Amino acid sequence: MQAFTAVFNWEFRRFLRHRNDLMQPLVFFLLVVTLLSLAVGPDEVIFKRIAPSAAWVAVVLAITLRLDNLFSEDYRDGTLEQISLSNTPLALVVGAKMLAHWLGLALPQIFSALLFMFAIGTDSAVNLTLGGALFFGTPCLIAVGAIASALTLGTRGAGTLIALLAIPLYLPVLIFGSSAATNAQAGLPVDAELYFLAGLSVLAITLSPIACAASIRARLAV
Amino acid sequence: MSLLSRITKFASPAPFYDLAEHVIPWCWIIFYCSLLAGLVGGLVFAPADYQQGESFRIIYVHVPSAWMSLFVYMCMASAGIGSLIWKTKVSDAFGRAVAPLGASFTFIALVTGALWGKPMWGTYWVWDARLTSELILLFLYLGYMALQNAIEDARGAARAGAILAIVGTVNIPIIHYSVEWWNTLHQGPTVTKFDTPSIHWTMLLPLLAMVIAFTAYFFALGLRRTQTELLAMEPRNKWVEERLAI
Image (tube, rainbow over all chains, first blue to last red; front, side, top):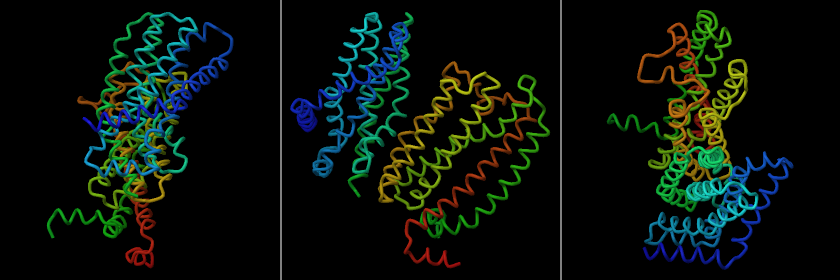
């Protein structure tokens, strides 16, 4: 437990100290959303309809591009190797890192998504549903992305490779999250989608640290 | 030699290589015979469908490739488990070797499905559960191959690929049960279900023959590719020199 809180504090403090790590993903979210909005064109009706999906795509991309931050710095300076040699279970350390990154990377994205939807003027029920879907879905994104990040430690072109590995595994989350928002827009119930997202997240959070630890050991043993 | 060690000796490169040399010609023979039976039965003897007419016959390529895409992925994941637990060279080589074959089967299934969908459903593609999950399977194969190519060390690449293959196994039941769990455009299960098949035997037998043909083809090519991977893994070893001298 001490090790968990220690690693979490250390990792989270890194977010607070390097403002770049906090701000850049938010600016990236804004850029992607602007890109999609301008690509759709001036038709406001169509835009309001796809706005939740645009928010989802922007969140997924922002998280995917930042995933190599999770392990690569510690891998390069040898910290990860030292941690893997110590008594602490590597899965526990991975879990602490994932929690810190969810708070530092995903939670601000959720807030900016809600801000974006508020600025567009969509229905508050839709905004709430989108916020809930993102809240339940982003832990799965971070957890699954962590596996992709751990598998590509030390390889050339790791950035795009992480995206190639992670995004196919993200698609179920994206499908359920997007359909939650779409159902909310149509006035249909969204319980099923939110339950599925929560279930996927719980599954990912429990199993991913083990897979990450195995991947890190595999990459360290080179 | 005990029975177990008679089986497990094939986890090392040289005995596996020699076993594959014996097995591959039989695989080709089975392939050609069942291909002939399947094509003649399916294209000539099977009656035309009452709804779809003659164009249903693409089923004899589409369904076997789809089944093979799932089967090859399970083979890859099993090889991955072997690589992680027992660290055998043969499982490393096998996983690496069959990935492109599986990706090709998935691609063929998607393309033949699209060609079949245009006259039947009026569209080449629709984002329903089965098509989307099969597309995800293609991405998983491509990601697996990309990961293995990105890591230079063969053992490290095999371990990383093994973990990826095992993580992606969750997609296989999703693909299989997608037509039962969701309201999809793709038709429901007709053969692999706990009931008599809802397809007439005159159409079913050529289909099974084509499945046997595709499986034999996969094993013939897969074993040959595994042999090549094993040769490439240890180029300066004595057993390689002996085999290549022949």
